[in-house]
Length: 124
Image (tube, rainbow, N blue to C red; front, side):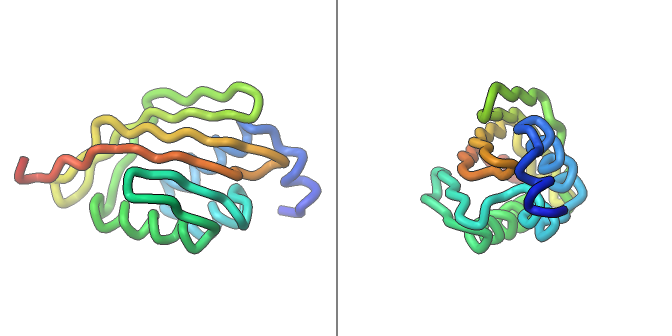
């Protein structure tokens, strides 16, 4: 996707493309198509920066929820803000029932995101 066509995408198109690629597990494609190189992500584990920080978070999620299946319960987009309520189940029996992400989307890229979820392990 060219930089010009990326910049013309609206916030809703960016967010839905991100969600589709996330379900497919296409981290590298998702980063290159939907995230600004200097994206900032805030979580309860700290702040993460750039594509390298996003890969750290993707690796964490894959460890906690291997072979995860996402369900997107609510997707809202207003101007350059997006919100996602989600849940997921994993092959190891772990699950998330309260996932909530927010996004700031500018010029066809996600420039900021917050992520929150509570991991329920199979032993709980």
